[in-house]
Length: 248
Ligand SMILES: NC(=O)c1ccc[n+]([C@@H]2O[C@H](COP(=O)([O-])OP(=O)(O)OC[C@H]3O[C@@H](n4cnc5c(N)ncnc54)[C@H](O)[C@@H]3O)[C@@H](O)[C@H]2O)c1
Image: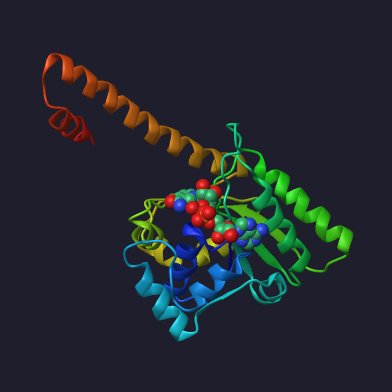
């Protein structure tokens, strides 16, 4: 498999997929990042990740490149984990990196393949990208069937390895039984350990991630509001939070 974009999400995903036994190539457009990762060096701190990176670069199961030609000719499954930063002065996400990654893959894949989006995106992105990928390949007259699935990422920084190897849930937005079968094979170990599997449409998969982020923000705002109340009326916010947290 390939992992496109080897930042926080991508470097973690690539090393964890190698740990699960897959042959993985990570691709980034930043040559300095690719060179550092190839030497087993991470540009950020994440517990357990340096060990996995060094182990699998040494074993040859994990390598890094800047070449879309190389990944397009080699991998069957391509994860997209490039950034979706907020556009300056707007609440909208900047989609240029995701779009560029999808088009570059579409132009370079030379056999049947599944592209799997992991970046956090606005609803409607997967449907738009599926058309973009199909149009790009039709215009270039490329052979093979290239499908798209959406598989949002829920990892937490500081727990990224654990969250990737043993996720709380797996959500996949798919448009065919074949795409779901491929992803079940990718995540077979987690599934055998009982991880909940939610296979749905693109829009639901995209919205689950946005809703999960909003829900987390709501919980933080909620407990902050109660903390202001305890500052005025007395009471201990830590005990209160623990107490409501026992609700099954
Ligand atoms: N970091 C997290 O904790 C986390 C958790 C869940 C979801 N996400 C989502 O994952 C996505 C990536 O986040 P991140 O924190 O890893 O970002 P990041 O900035 O650390 O990494 C993004 C990488 O993509 C590369 N890139 C940009 N354009 C590219 C292209 N066309 N081809 C190949 N590589 C390209 C960049 O050079 C960079 O290395 C975002 O949508 C983010 O919201 C992140």
